[in-house]
Amino acid sequence: MSEGAKPHHVPGGFRNPWSSEPVRGFGALLKWKVLDRFLRPRARPTAPPAAPRVVPPSFPRPHAPSDRLVLTWVGHSTFLVQLGGVNLLTDPVWSERASPVQFAGPKRRVPAAIDFAALPAIDAVLLSHNHYDHLDDGTVRRLAAAHPGARWVAPLGLGAFLAPRGVRDVIELDWWEETRVAGLAIGSTPAQHFSSRGIRDRDRTLWCGWSVAAAGRQVYFAGDTGYHPEFAAIADRFGPFHAALLPIGAYDPRWFMRPVHMNPEEAVRAFQDLERGRPPVPGRPAIMVGMHWGTFQLTDEPLDEPPIRARAAWRETGLDPERLWLPAHGESRAI
Image (cartoon, rainbow, N blue to C red):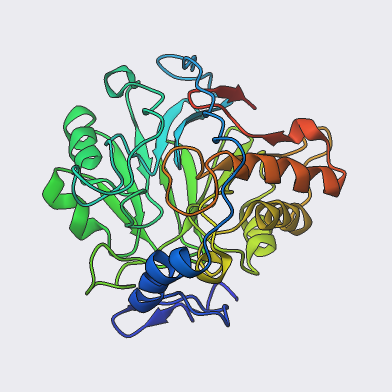
């Protein structure tokens, strides 16, 4: 897809322009949650899933040096990204549940690895789409009150959600559009997903990933996505990346999740596409960072399965094992 064309736009909303496999609807959700689990139950693991690792956060304060990229995993798709002397959050969720209500819905298996009150001053927030495990009402309100000077960067249509919750500074971008925030170059990238917070707003707001660059460091945050053909083009436009944050969880059952969530093998393939699109700078090999697993039990695979499969897929590529980072909750890594 060329950046000048907009085949993802349709009257009243947006669509995935490449997939021949449609995003599943409410009827398929009922089939998965009721019929599939009754008629074709998944084999029970012989042992309970291993508890996700948690380490005390140790990120630089108040900022990382301007020539450093430091990533800290808060959980799920929430990272503290410190780059170019700027503190940035991705898809911030600090609530106990990824749900429209806090008495039901997917509950955290691991607390947010950085206590909300311990966050450094936040300069910018990136949002990938409006699903509850990525856009949390309570967290938006808390961040807007505690960090009123932050600029929020979101895909088309989300400003209407943010403003009533106290967010003062919002910029919306379409795929391939760019902006600058506090010295960072931020680009919106295609993703294969969908949007909705209810039963009547399907695909009315856009979904995306993000490229962030400053001081000779570039990081790619894929957001929430199925495997699609644009990863090489993303790297060609915005790369080469020093780190690629790619989702590896919430993929089972495949008949339901394939259009919208990569499995670990597809995530490794997407990383290879990124490197094919723009090879890394000699002497600075990129790292793949696995996210979107281990925090909420959203789908049927065991909570500890995604990193096991990601490591196996990585070994099959022959890539340096040091270039795959599957962080513990709270773990930081300087690039």
